[in-house]
Image (cartoon, rainbow, N blue to C red; front, side, top):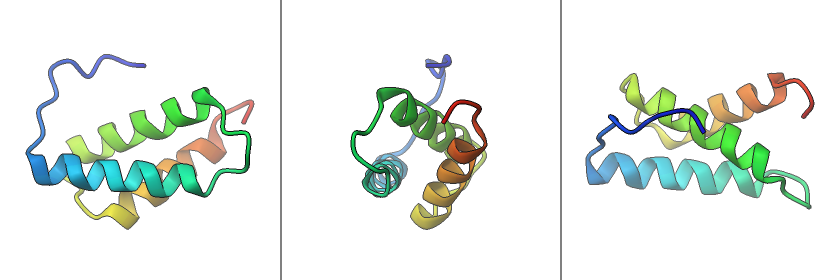
Length: 72
């Protein structure tokens, strides 16, 4: 996972990111690969760091990025 060690988020943002991660992963076919979860998580972190707080938007962007990732 890329370095997000300097990222800081308020509790409500963490809640939104967690919800977006769960919703995005729930749409993946079984078996869910850890690499896919990492890609989704990184996308959500990156998008949230730009100020996005909408769970549906965070989920949609993460899934779009996953679909554009080679080898997925």
